[in-house]
Length: 180
Image (cartoon, rainbow, N blue to C red):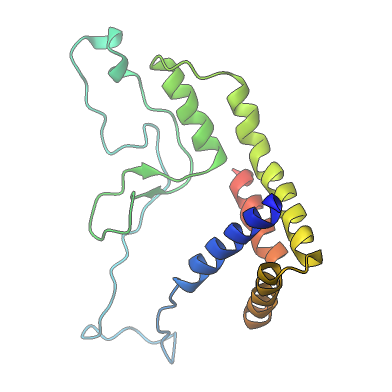
């Protein structure tokens, strides 16, 4: 029962996530230059993250003995923002495995007491989630209660409409999460 409840929450969250996605209008001829009078969205091109990952790192009084002067880790990926606000500085590192582990080590250097077992848990998380999701999906597929039947219908409908299986979407997402 608990597994079905968890899967139901996961399914509801996935459906809400998918329903909030909007596609941009595509040009009839993608090879033409955009008309400057049309509403053109400006996209800020961002290069790879460089050492320090922040536009600048301030220096605080106390020199090397001040933990706030600890150098930022070397992040990988693209710089981003914390939300969907337009026109703000991109100052946040991409969320990926390498960056999570880098910031963990940085926090240790700043004095946080983070157990060394944390890294293994972070590395194992995508596969552990994959196993739990597959088990929940299997349990849901064989359940006959009304809520599970509704979730089965929603899953089948979503897969038919998009042409993508739940396994494909979830599996690829978890592969991407653990790839960097």
